[in-house]
Length: 452
Image 1 (cartoon, one colour):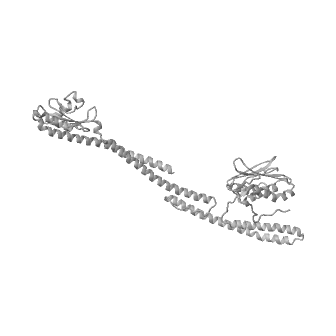
Image 2: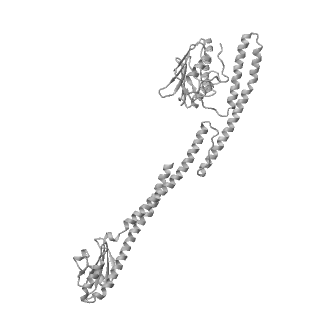
């Protein structure tokens, strides 16, 4: 935008100056010629007036020659005196020297003073001297082309300098205006980027032209409205999670009434883990803004496989984990990453026949991204499967794969699924590498402990 504004200003200023300066240059040229001609006419009239008495006496020719010689100085127009008999006093008047008496001189001898432009260029001024002995004499002042337009180049250079100065001033003003507009637009865009990244405290400062100030005000209104809606949704989620405490408490009471002590302790531990999970949901729902910590993809994958391993062994499944020994930091909160892996493993355990093996692979691609693959050797997805939230071809809620997909895509990664009846199902999550090392893994509130 800034460059376009500069180009537009330069083009407009150049066109206006061209329309203004071209007539001015022609005017200065004409003015210079008129001024020089007026000076030459005044000189010729002065010489004619001075030589009038001298030419009236035939013996005063020497005086006339001295007068003509005195006015012919360097850098001044050439002044000549053509007597009635054709004799020329002074410098050679040019091409007319071959024909002492030209049509112009004959016309001047009739008593007319005039200026004309010969075919050879320049300009000549002729003034008759009446009363001269031997016929009317003519004072002839010859202007060369250079003398006629003397000073024109200087005027043109001054006009060109003024034009260049005006263009530079216009560009400077346009640049300042463009910088103001572009700066306001960029700051507005940065505020929008912060809002898109989840920083709901970001607000735009109304500045710049009225249109940008209006956009900034509307953006601030939108940010406030988003914050209000998210706050209401968090409260609703927290309220719904809080309502789960009642049936969980009932489960705890039922577990305490069991006669089998070992079974009662095991179920009580599971209920306690469920309570911690509900509390964690409430805390997360009430948290105003989500931090963006980094998690180790390989470590979280091994941890979740360890958690699900007892159930996999009960179902007769072979489990394989392949992960590089070095860390694979990805920009995803650890609990979100664990939820995505749990969803993928849970799909395998719930929707493939018992005894179906599965494997989890974590590696770094040549492009520098971290990749997680969960593959099983089951019958594959049904033909009616649709990769949409809330849609499933096996009677489930259809949220598992969507949780994994959103986890990858929210981090700037990709989600891919491939399935056929012979090779099973392969789900691949790709994450961008985090720019810093992950924080040490800590036990998450509400994380269920593996059961034996």
